[in-house]
Length: 409
Ligand code: AMP
Ligand code: GLY
Image (tube, rainbow, N blue to C red; front, side, top):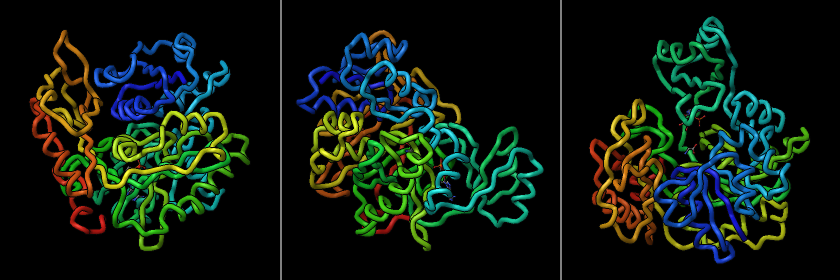
């Protein structure tokens, strides 16, 4: 099978690495890719996706990021006859518009935070008058994880809303979980739950980011969590999307809060999460190409049950100076040749001549597998310490509470 992956971040590197380990994948291409991906796949410039897929005679196209899905790349590829992993544009609105996602959840009876929509500062002020802090304010558009503020400070909440249509939400308490579920529109196959670390600094301080680290599985998760999410969230959502005539095929990323009142959906995404994918795929033994092909061709019901490796995985993101507010680029990345026994996934790197340099906010996602979370943490952090990038930073507490046997709030 000839597979084309679209994208060029840490998630796509993780996808390409897993696909390169699938014996059924005979040729692997990635557009545009990055220097890390180039070690496991043939990288090509991302011109027009249909043109690239045609050029490489792709049997399967895996669309990594949300932006092309929301823009209709899935539709274009399907119309051109390709098997595509990733939803069409109308179904990708589950991520593209928070207001749309809320409407679908309400129609499907899916538990989520109560919400209000506002387009003017006056409406925002009126809604906040009736709420107690913390305030949750979300821009109603794609924002790479940065369109959300959760704050006790009313002035900050109001300032975040200026110039945007926003969704204001009831505050959800409790630990957060990311559960990825594959679906071809009918069958659903959950992957293992993971946890992401959204804030930039240790102890969940500082602004939200795209994600500073992850681990899987969750030793503290209730045993019925996955079944509960599939039955109460995923099946009703998939059913509602089909009922509307916009069936969802691909990966439904359920961002959940486990509140004292039960599970609540914080957000839906329509693609693999970054950096949770790096942790989750590190433990997947089932060949990824066959699995994604089954999703893309509507044959997921015939796919054998998934096999997982024993143990745990931890991913630590190394971010560039200034991330997330004003990431600096062009810093040299050194020390990678000394790192062994872990996967160093490239998220924001490029070549400047023959020097590997930073080209984005999240630069590397170092992913280690171990017998348990503590062992995986040790390997991941040992590797991170061997890597040097001027001004870079990373969180030192990824999976620390879970490794210590605590439920992670
Ligand atoms: P989102 O992009 O909707 O996932 O929001 C980004 C992050 O903001 C989430 O992962 C949560 O940590 C936080 N967040 C979003 N919505 C809520 C909410 N209703 N209550 C509490 N925290 C939230
Ligand atoms: N890790 C958060 C996201 O992928 O949206």
